[in-house]
Amino acid sequence: MNSESLTKYTSSLTSAQLYSLLLLLPVSVFFLRKYAFTSDSNSTSSPSTASSSTGSGNDAEQSGTEETKSIMQPPREDLLPPKDDPYTLEELKAFDGSDPSKPVYVSIKGTVFDVSRKSDVYGRGKAYNIFAGKDGSRGLGMSSLKTEDAVPDWSVLEEKDKKTLHDWYTFFEQRYNIVGRVTDMPPSVASFVVSHANDPVSSNL
Image (cartoon, rainbow, N blue to C red; front, side, top):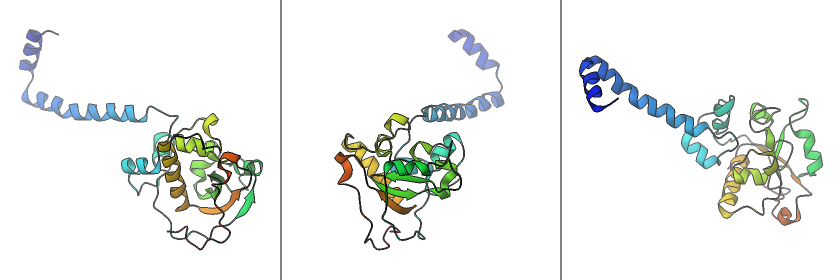
């Protein structure tokens, strides 16, 4: 459409029609931005990044984008004292959500968290099941949902990714009960595994 045709077209519109077109413009821009934001399904952001875009009160875990966003939740004040039960990486596999009679565990940096109350997020077939029944610290640090990244050796992460991993650890520590630790983490990160044997009830803080 050339400038002359455009001029004729706009002059033929009523004031009400022009006003309606102007109202539609910001709505169109919003949906374009929303599509661009949700197009990458193989990544997850750190708790601090996600909370800034979703708010701290969103706890309605649903499918797709809503399930990814709503992992955010406020810290809990009713956590149990941390346990120091030993688990091998092989033993953790039994707690991947496949067996509904067993709890669902996620290990981060060798600390095992019970995420059973969020089985709609970490359970079988759910958005974050990739981290269930294993230590997938590297993937959390990389903000990746790829199977090949969900491994326990996080020593190769860049500093910014280690910061992201630390944010996830803190997030879990404030929201999920600690039920044990992994005893056979890779040598490169084994010394970083925290023992909770003599911890006070401090995971609530």
